[in-house]
Image (cartoon, rainbow, N blue to C red; front, side, top):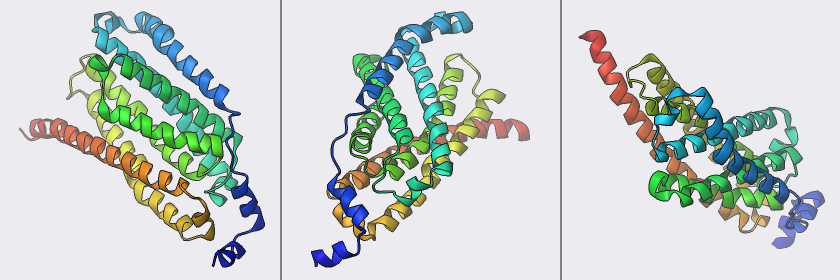
Length: 271
């Protein structure tokens, strides 16, 4: 039976499976990203915020910590999201080889992400009593665990890139927090427009993306190569189930927030 299965797999695929080995080449990039985001958080973000934002000095210590981490988050999300979109469009090899594929651009992107997630996790743990959030911490830990496999073993690259498209919604989530912290009225035009756009983008890149993602998983799960992927299959499935549950919880909160804001606005229009 095993021989029949192997016969259905190309010799190139078999060779790639045999040669799946730990690759530490990009770990220095992770360390560089980690250091970069810590320097931003500790020195550059506070310095520029004092100069550019008048109300920054009035923030509490907890708000200043959160403020700086959200700047980091937005930088990471924009950079990573743009590269992910480019790869989905331009890198045909990625879609053609979703289970085993080596892309230096993807590995660089993942290194940048892992470095950011690691730095943010350190900051959250260090200041957990002030900005601690169990869902965010769980999201970071699970994501790092999965991305580390892709980075060091070159497995499941398409799926890692696809999941990172979700980062495109993060800057709008952060803008909402900035507006709220700067005491913008929740019924003001910037707050309402950003809230609607945030929910809409989050819906498309994280919720609508779910069935597309799981359909792609199904299409590779019925191929002969899938049975040779070992425990990587379970990492792919279980990690993404956890991430999807977290995203559904976050999205439900966004929808409730939008409804709370829109109902008073709608009432004023008809009042």
